[in-house]
Length: 502
Image (cartoon, rainbow, N blue to C red; front, side, top):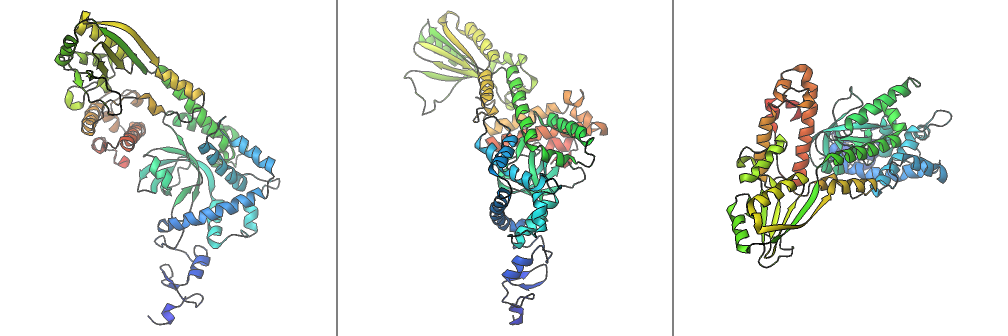
């Protein structure tokens, strides 16, 4: 390499890196001050903050720029005015730390890009007219991208590409092609087909959510979208130039609250219909302990279980899982088809558990249906050997609904399933394969009463089938993420010719 080759072709100073866009050596100063503005940078350049390879640099720049944005916005609004905007944006009566963080980020975007003064100018447009005073080249580039297209929207995750990248679509913009979203926190927490209400920014080679995104759960997504479109249609009659993204941005706090309250309402309604009860029955032993134990050993539905080392163990006690096996399989006739097992290769369901002590017997189930069946079977099997002394039935679903009403931020709908139906990976794989083989030829209400196999052959039914399968795939991937089950139904998508969902 000659001395001239080691000089920056722009300013003549000592060059540090090869600029793959210019095909020549360039110094750090020229790279930093001209990239993206005077130099059309390649998406393969690791020094370009708006390429995927330069994402770490983008994060660093964004951290500094965020502080500058905060100072600029605060300098144009007094404290009372600023607090009023935050209060109007809050969508919980007793907001959590996550909510406050989300709203705070949105408020700065709202005040900077959406709110207009009496002359119809946004704060961002004023700053831009001042040539982004106080910002570096990269920060100016970042602000130009945000000013041109920074709105609230609803996105759907199509694929998780790696630890930070996702392929997404914008549900409020049918003309926009799929785009790459970069966000490590989001990538770690979502599954395919998750829908997110968020503020979105597009950059040259990737997109980024501007603050914490809020999930539209499966229970509320359709109703939320319908309400948004209906409300926008009404407002657009008054403002013909208004877009749905602008409308959502201007009313972001209201729609966040609507999503939050709608989810609570639907969850309460679901819990009110669920048989989720913690039931316990205490029996005293009237016969000999050995006689009672011999019957437990006789019937196939009772299998001994190891006591958790951390749990208190009573000397001379025995602990059993009560499975839907033998005569106890009769219960499945009263259960939905999804929970029925043709044979044990598809898994064995659980009724409850039993603790046998030298002087008593305790039966525990997690639904009133199973509890009533268990009491009937105890009476049939043990007759006069045991006597029901006392019992307790706690409505767990009602307790969880009360926690919703009290705005318990630790509440999780997953708590309603205290005991998994199957907990072995191999068993679950077999169970799901069996259920989805039946699913292909079952008449599904969500498909207007036709089977998935029939719907796959009807072009008019295809959108409904895709929507249904997205829900199934999302549920399976959530199971995989939570329990590391590695469930896969690609074979089913092949059967239905839904290759776009793989």
